[in-house]
Image (tube, rainbow, N blue to C red; front, side, top):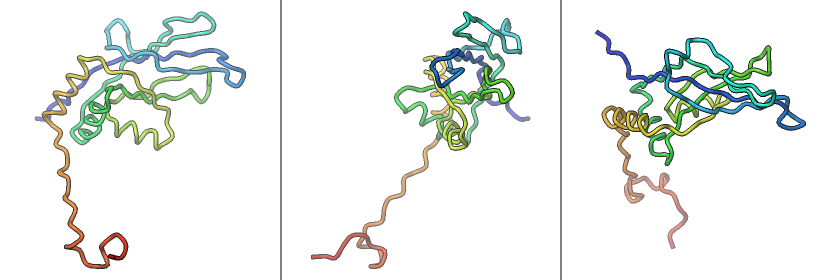
Length: 166
């Protein structure tokens, strides 16, 4: 019987600023990642709009932990400030709207998204989620053992680095 992966369910709040400067019509900012609540429903909804700043709640993101992302979780936890990574996109048909696509806790996964030219922002991870991630990572992640470099005296002359002796 397959076991379910550990997960947390969250909602993402994106903020949109109208005409932040003369070069941009809109600027988007990741504002919050919050625990999912039943009252949020399943569709994005406008929380605030004063004509300049609008905040949208995007519910229903499931952040699952995968064994093959252990190194990415470890890197996130040891970075000094563990974070949520949120991939988001501006709507192609309506550039005044943006939407989050997915949320992760893996530093490596966020790096792959950035390599693919995606927009990725992050926000600090709450202490309880960081502790949950740390406990899972401690149980499931084992770093690759470091390979000891062979001393130069044991390598063939053509494989040795450095200049002539003298």
